[in-house]
Image (cartoon, rainbow, N blue to C red; front, side, top):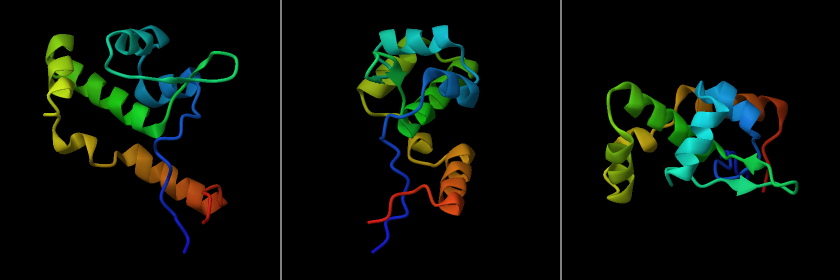
Length: 110
């Protein structure tokens, strides 16, 4: 059977790519991490590496901030697992990326 699902938890994206995808600055991304809203993995050289799940979370945080939520509100939402279904819905970006990877054959087949 071919597994065509994207491994959204695989931390392979550098902060420069995440910055472009989320429209957040490096400083904002690092700040959200320091506030325990995000946990990143580290590469061999100690650089932050992000997964697509991390990108989705950052986009969600940005959207909540833009709608007037405070960091405390957002933190409480994540802590109590009351985040809206937006987290479970794939963003347009993820759909596009999945399709591109499928087209160029970059998804692993099992």
